[in-house]
Amino acid sequence: MEKAKGYSLWLMPSGDVYNRLAKTISQLSREYSAPNFEPHVTLIGSLIGSREEILTKTAKVASLIQPYEIRLTEVSYLDEYFRSLFVKVEETRDVLNANLRAREIFKRQEDPRYMPHLSLMYGNFSRRIKEGIIAEIGKECAMSFKARSIHLFSTSGEPKDWYRVKEFIMKEGAE
Image (cartoon, rainbow, N blue to C red):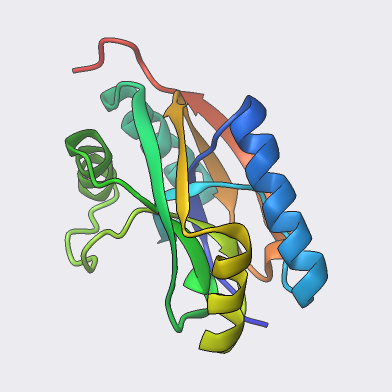
């Protein structure tokens, strides 16, 4: 089991999109003995610092970003624990600019290229297993949701240990 550290800023769907994705994640978790977690797109992760500093900077990020659409496109996979099986997010200007703002506020210019995605399963699984899951659930994932808030999560330890610290509502008409 891989462990994460620090805090992460998540963008989370709601309503029917949340329920459908949570059901898929939960089913895969049970079937493959993988961690269960809430559906989310990570805006920025592995944030290290005091809780107060992270809260202040997260509030600043939320004040600079207007709500925006997140469009899920296709299911894919990598040979990485936390990106084992995921749905790609269309790289729109809003999606990339939100990550850029977060990196500016958290002084993380050195980050590798942002790859927005919504994970469906964490773990170290073979290519055959992941391709089998994609064949079963389908490669296309034409869902979207409006990101209206930023959820600050403590992501230290294993996924079962993660928890929401606070939700920050994005400002309509920011900037």
